Length: 315
Image (cartoon, rainbow, N blue to C red; front, top):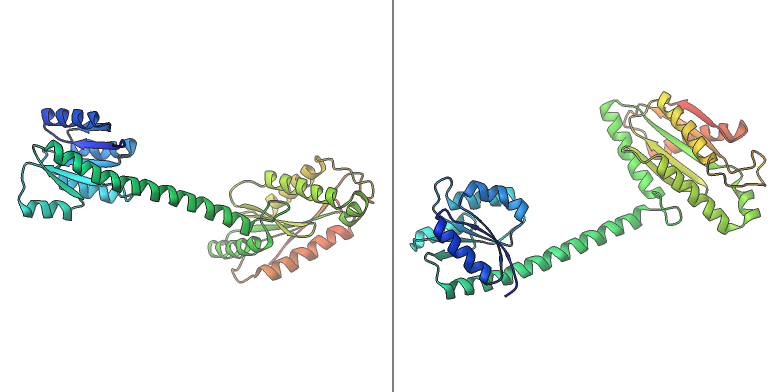
């Protein structure tokens, strides 16, 4: 018989020790206690596959313990009640209170082994279902990542950006809090691609994306690829003063990558231009009109010579 982790709850010391030894000889791992309250406390740490629970105990009845376990631990685990009584009404009540089976004391060895075999089948199915659930959850998480992630740069894609921007506008609007959006353009990227080749161009975008993701990794911050060589950073609970500091930090961080760009008319290294808008949303703004606004601010940064940021407040 495969091993189960069995939580044994029996207030009579001698009966508890005898039954625990019998279960251990059958190959099971046993945690034995004489208190219903202690059993509830031990449940999480021990993580049982099966609970053997005495119906009559001084501190808390077995049916109360079972009810409490079902309330506290929704992950279903079989419970077999133990009792010296075999009245049909008591058995029915025990099952109604969350039990799955019933054993009359003194427990017959043959009956015990048969009950354990039946419970083991249930436990094995439960383990298989749990494994399947974990695999499915992992697959769904991976699928969600693929759906929301830009394939080249591994930051959020435009679809996810649109969704998060809408959510942030609504949330900040309801709470009357400021937020900021930064649009970033890699300076003279076409010239970089033409001279170094598309593979190096991809590596350049990947390096910048990784740097942005590292720089803006706190809660309430999102980095996304807007399209081509453009990225967007969303900053939650962020006024203009803080947003300006973040733009300066971003500029310095990209420069420290030291990616050569011999065809740039701005600098010998790859640089970026930034347009930043900070505002307290009304909740009525759409991603489309905010992209349009921040793009105009970005265009001013390019007009002024690139490798810089222009900050604006939207009211």
